Image (tube, rainbow, N blue to C red):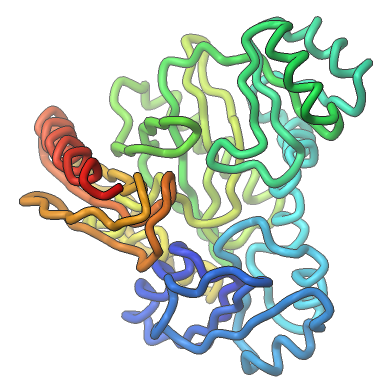
Length: 371
C-alpha cells in the first residue's frame, strides 16, 4: 500500500520508519521550501508550492491509498482539493479547525469539553475588555501559526501589554488567564476507519520556553475516574468529528479537574516514548488507523520516558550515553531545534526519573562544547 505524507519533518520520518514492518511505500511532499533532510532515502520526494494543482501533485506522487499530514500547518485549500480525488486522513475540515485557535475553541465548546477560559480579540477595544475579564497574568495566543511557544506572549502587567501592543497589532488573538495547574499532561488517542478507538496512558509533560523537554508515562497520582473522564472527552470529540488517525489532547490538570489546552490532529512529541516501548507505537497505529487495519496495543506495564534533544548551537553535540535509546532526525543543528529524542523505560518510576536526570546532565555537558 502507498501512503503520501505532506511534510518532510521528523514526524514524517518516524511515520515512514514505523511503516516499514507494515510493508508500506511512502512518498513525501515538501511544502514550499522546507528541508527534506529528515526523510532522505526513505522514499521519493515531490516538491509542492502554491499554483501546483492537486491533480498534478497526485500524478507526481502516483495515486496513493491515502494522504496524511505530519503537521497541521498545511495549506487547507490543497487538502480540500486532494480529498476530492483520494482519501485524506485526518480530514481537511479537522486540520483547518486545529490550525485556528478560535475555531478549535468553538469546536470544543460545542461538545461541552472542559477547556481553559478564553476571550477572542479583534481590536484594541476587545483587547482591553478581555484583559478586564481575565486579569493578570495572562497569555495571548495568535489565532494561527502558534507552536513551540511561537506567536504566544506571557503578559504579567499592563506595562508589558502596552509594549506588546506597540509591536504587534492586537488582532486575531485569543486571551487566556494563566492557569495555576498542578501538571501539564496529554492524552493520545487513535481512531480507525471502522471506528475502533484506543488510548495511550495519560502522559506527564515538562516544558521549557514553550518547548517540550521531557515526558513520562503514565502520569502518577491521577484517579482512574479522572482518566476515564479525559478519555471520554477525547472519544466524544473523535466520534463527533469522525476523526481518523492519531489525535492528541494537551491538558492542564488542576485541583478542580482537567482543562484542554490545545489539540493536535497528528502524532505528537509527547508520544515519542511509544517508539521503543512494548506497545504499538503511535506512528504505526496512525498508519493502521488511516489504512483501516486493526489497531495495536497501547497499554504498557512499564514506566516510559522521553527526553527531547534540543540544539544549543550550530554543532551537533557528541552524544555518548550509557543508557537509553537515541533517535536522531538528521537535521542540521540550530539553537532550540528538535534534533532527536531519547527513550527509556523502567519498572520503577523513581529509578526512571533518576536515569532521565542523569542523561539530561550528560547532554547538558555535551551541549556546552557544541557552540
